[in-house]
Image (cartoon, rainbow, N blue to C red):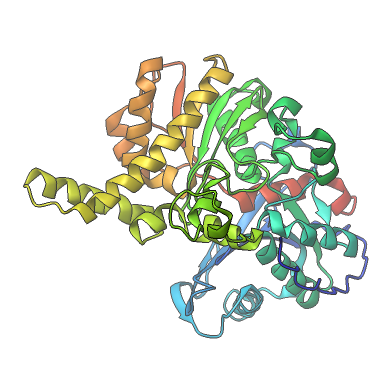
Length: 465
């Protein structure tokens, strides 16, 4: 049985005209389970046609990153854009930040005091919402859409609740701005029914919305656009295998510019392991994990009632490479794995130290599972393999391991280029061999920018000039 859900919050949302003057500012907000990323933009193009835009239509004014919200003291960073001056901070501890609401309020105060930007200049707030259910396009937050997102919180317990708390705060603190939800699930609406469906009673599945939705969609949309620009190709002609690898990780097969398949499913839990997520497991595992007998047993006297919330807690928050190593930092996993390898060579390693290699090998093995499957689904017609996300963009070792496995299908990479990705500028960095038709790329994804761009191009959000 599922525990009784907490009472729904009552949110008073005044319906306002979403049309705004293009001189107003766009705030893009990305709420994680214990973090808050915020970017502020201004429009720099007057046209509203995609074909008229030759560069980014919005200019980044500043970025704020707030981490450790659930494990105080929170860490606050505030960085101004290239053409702006003011007081910047990096990882400043802030005791007054206790939750996403106080984190957002602290940002707004800092915005006015240090960047000299008044909150009244913000006309649209774009919120990344992980699970949109059957919402396939961005929606203005109304009482109806707020309630819809709140009902979906059980399907994305690490994210939707955090996004809702920020949305609620925006409505209260920025009443004249329009809050707009952008959904990670939207990008994957193109998946064919046979891929999106599970092998269960379809009457129940359709009634309850039990299907594969997929996530990281804003990131995949940005990557598709950035890679198309880099290759000078029409996005609708591209076949890509994209890896968004971070604390939450997934892989996506893109065919003709559309999502064909992705590793996450009904919720972000399945697929690849993450920092605290188990990833794909046998559905029966949770019952054996909690069994009183401490072993596999169908003896009813040894059984325990496993509530859905308990299972979610174990598989979402008490698993992943943290459960194996004790840290959520994949960089630490790699560092300690290499140290352990040196000790092994010297005959000094302990059994406990092998956990670092276990975590690395387990994660990369699962990545290879999906990359290989998607290579077959695309029938080998792959224009590029793309690494992205915090781990994909920064881990030299992970990229080298994955590309070593892809050598068997003729996709090669350049080890020297792979070593110096961090030293290269630009949103897309090539680490394959220039003469190869099938490219190997690293893309620095930007979900906030993707939301701001989509907001810019949506005529319904702006006054006619």
